[in-house]
Structure formats: C-alpha cells, structure tokens
Length: 138
Image (cartoon, rainbow, N blue to C red; front, side, top):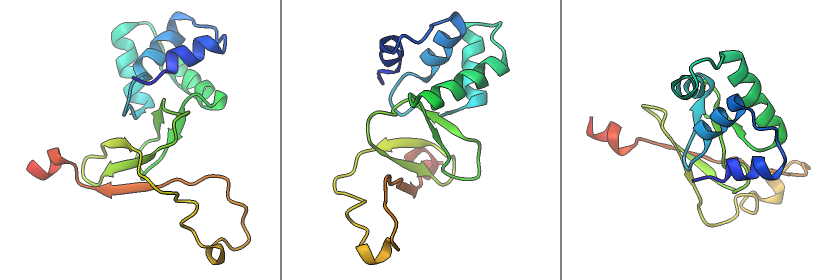
C-alpha cells in the first residue's frame, strides 16, 4: 500500500469525511484511477459525495504534491498516490492498464550532453508501452 493517508495526516491536512474517502480510494500500489473512477468508488463508500468535491480534492492533492497527475496517452488523466517514490510507468497499449515500475539505471544520465540542447534538466518521465497478459490472452 502507498502511505498516502499517513502522509496527509502527518501534514495536518484537515481530514473531512469526503477527503478521507477520496484518499482511501487512491491509497495503494499501482493505483492510477481517473477522476470519474475515483468518484464512482467514493460514492460506494459515501453516497452523498459530489463529483465537484472529488475533483476539488484531487486538485488539492496534486497541488500539495501528494498525488501525481499522470497522462500517458490521449485518455483521461489518472491520479497516482506514489508521489514520493521515484518510478516510471508501464502502460498496456490495448486496455490502458498502468503499473509502476522501478528499472535500474539513470535515465537522466543516459541522455548525452549533446542531446540536452543547453537545458538544465530537473525531471525525467519514462513510459514503457506493451500489451498486458490479460490482453494477450484475450
């Protein structure tokens, strides 16, 4: 499980029932839900939670740096609670499933100085694409 709830409590984030439900829905490894998926799961736990509250809470979590907004294709943005553990993403080209991966090596170091065009690089995002076992067997 990710430590999202612990991190939020440690920051003194005001934990209303709505915020808690959104954080609980997001908490876990390999969680990359869309806002609509977060809302659908949150409604199961707290039927009165509004879509606007879910969107506002997600926006606040991204602003706080506690959740990453992930866009791996032209589909809806997804929300990743593993904001404090460096990782890349492995995406299924058919169904869009996303997994966190932790390859060895240094992708920043792999970019030669001649290919940096004078940029001071602060971050690297790597997305691996393939077909997941479920789609291969379908």
